[in-house]
Length: 235
Length: 149
Image (cartoon, rainbow over all chains, first blue to last red; front, side, top):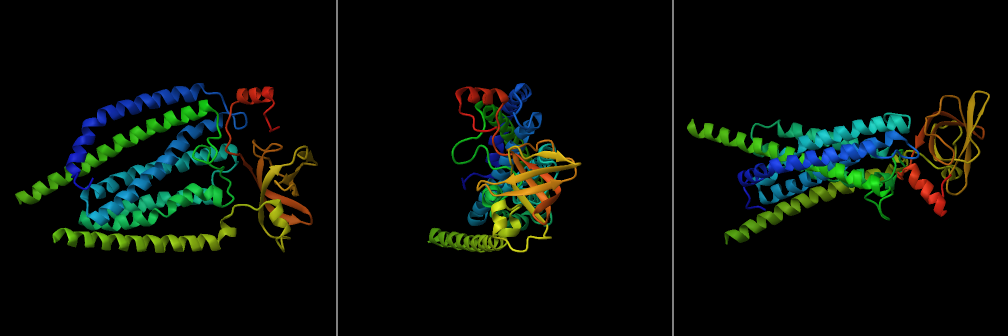
């Protein structure tokens, strides 16, 4: 892992990216068909279908932060430029994901709870996660040298890791308006199999899209640094 | 010789990060532990029994709408919020209820006690984490396994 240079990883991911985006588009189309033809929930009616965007993006916004935090740890300990670049290219995706979670959650909340926003533990900790993503991006672009930026931003990512279990378990630790987890919980999923399969197809579609997006951002960062370095050498 | 030196540096950095992380998570834990009553979004009717001075205090009470208690009387919604220990609170609400408020379903009421009656200013429906189509419920009912209403 530490021997991989950013260049190798970037070339590897770009060579696979056309298959990744094809797989992603296929899975997303299948999931859209499944979502359209799925039977409504007995209680919430059609409004529960927003779950098939809300839940995958919520999982991804947490998973992306976990990867970001771990690669920041690896980057700081082993001084690995690859790990720093992974963290750097993940934060914009995570920010977009968490904004999608907050917006779809607000819409869903207004349809079912009767309010767009409340300050309960789950919603607040998710908002904090979005702000940590934003802070990470701002830190990355507020230094002249990218090594310094990477150092500062990784400290933030590692500190931000504390927030992940709070987001995940907030619904179990405190009373919240938000319902508890339906899939990743003790005792198995609390939804019927047709809903679960649709959710997983939708998740893998968005996951593949994330991978595609990530490899493109990674590629752009690596190529930009190559150009900058060649300009420096020519001067 | 160089490898040993590198390992030492890695160890130092690792311990440095571990200390940062441990201190930060400990502080977050202490903050959230001491504020746990404020972080909790609502209290259950059972918790109200152990609380003093609930009169004129702005509260959120959560639970299920008791079966056969939801009525529309003189322009007000009247119902009981009940929890697992069968303790209940009588609630009056004068505005429109959210669509999903039904008997035997989750609810959170926000307002104040006036005497023994909880006068709600905001009512939110709290749905649970179970999702299933009507057909699955019909099937469960046929098999006699359905426990809802």
